[in-house]
Amino acid sequence: MERIFLHNQQLHEFLETLRLFGELHAPTLNDSGVMAFSPLRQNSDLRLDYSRTQIPPKKFLIPFREEILHYKEGRYRLGHPRPSEIVLFGVHPCDLDGIAYLDLVFLGEAPDPAYADRRARLTLVGISCEPDDFCFCSGGRSADRCDLFLVACGDGFLLSAHSGKGEAIAAAAAELLVEPPCAIAPPAASGCRVTAQDPQLRFSDNPLWDKFAGTCVSCGACSVCCPTCYCFDVREYPDLSGGGKRVREWDNCLFVTHGEVAGGNFRQTRLERLRYRFLHKYCGFTPLQGMTSCVGCGRCKSVCPVDIDLRELFEGDGMPAGGAQ
Amino acid sequence: MRERKDLPFAATLLERRDLSEDTALFRIAPEPSALKPLSAFVPGQFVQLSVPGGGEVPISPADLPAGDGSLELCVRRVGHVTELLHRARAGAPLGIRGPFGTGFPLQEMEFRPVLLLAGGLGIAPLRSLLMHLLRNRARYGEITLMYGARQPKLMLFREELASLAAKGGMRLYLTVDFAPEGPAGGYSCAVGLLPDLLKGYRFDAENSYAAVCGPPPLYRCLTADLERAGVGAERILLSLERRMRCGIGRCCHCALGQKLCCLDGPVFRASELRQIPEAL
Image (cartoon, rainbow over all chains, first blue to last red; front, side, top):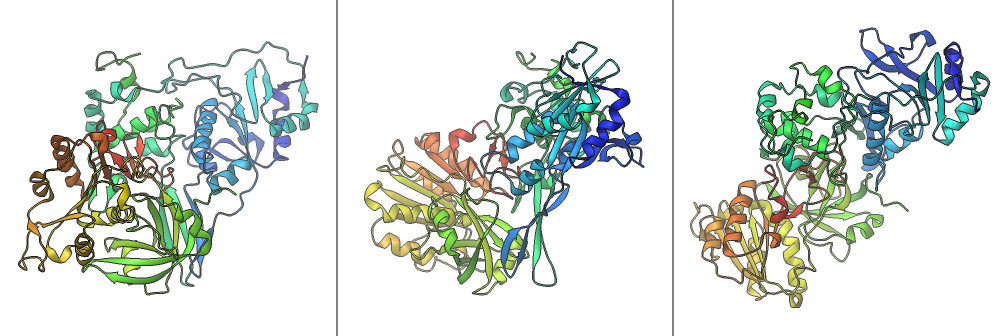
């Protein structure tokens, strides 16, 4: 049998191997008590029992604020600095799905230079997880959307490589691996995945929208912590030397400014903004129309201060006839 | 080589011509390497104009690129970036990306009557369409421009449009919401709203294309009026305005329903927008 099993006792050695491939980031509990993907200073800080980080791994690819252009003497140049190699360890399948979606947006027909550079230097090591009450993913299907995937199994992990990088890591860790003592179990799933929706059925006149709009405070937390929310604003800042920089920063479609144009606003009300966000999330935009970008990570529900649970929409309550699936 | 979409090309402001107290026509010269991509411009498409230190704004050029590759952009002073542009002097460095988006379906419109309906600054994108139609006069049917402005002094390109109409290639109808300074400088000009002009107009609606650009309320009533007159919704072309930040389908600022103004538009058919409540 193939030597693909990593014993729990070898995990710290394995982390040391990962450090050979870049700066190691992993789920840790930060000083504010928030679960976050952060640089793993000591291996003992690793929290593999985490359910979800507050901010998804999109921050590694689209920083909250980043310089995209700078100009000097009137000429613009690409501005982002060359990113460093990062190994992100312990990413759950839903977050891998999230990154795969962002790849479609930013590496499509006209790849985004800053994103492409960061993505090329990001190594993803995924790990299987146990869904909790907030999760609504289908599980399992994301194992190949990373470089290396670990499935918890007995007192260790089964490794599978899904890229050249993943194979290189597995080869470097070969001494730590043994033949698996257990059969490969299918990964856990929450069993209530929300799939791409028919916008006309679900986003027409469901009374739940009014209920949500009545409680939503437009704080935008659901969008900030969504692994596939990527919309951004662009600002330009001159400096005193006559040059300057153009930055992009996360924006939020729940904010009233999002739909503004000179002299008007196309999404003035909360209801319109909520519906807009979820139409995008579940029905997709050109050119990804028809594709849901919700990965079921459960963050939006877990951070919502007024307990809006989008799953209500999909569970048949208040649905127009024929809407529930 | 991959198409360059993220990085603005350098450009220089050549000259400006004031059209009203807050709107001017800027002629800009893009650097030589930008001329090839910009030559693909189709009326109705837009470019992202950068004013260093201010940022970027989407502008739909007011004409096709000139023989020397220079571009005319009609810009109202309305925000931070356009304010800086209005303060810029000839020779000032600018940046330009594009053209982006979907313009007017020129081929499909061939040999058909075309009715252009412009309200206020909406004349700017329609002027590039008009210029294309007039330069290829034999390939199009009857050309009619109806242009409404708030008052005579805010009517842009007035002399130019009048002299184009005098050459006989097009019919021109002007209207102002009100005329505090009396009849509009000697030109034939109605007082009233654009839909009032349309109401009294008899035309071959079943074969016509209508191109509309103006302030948001205009689209709603004109679309309904045009359909009532017999112009099919798929032949009513609306050039919409949104705050396009990136211009290339990423920032999501210009979304309407499941469409993006910067990719699917800014020129849409009225039939495409029917299911999108926030579109108009």
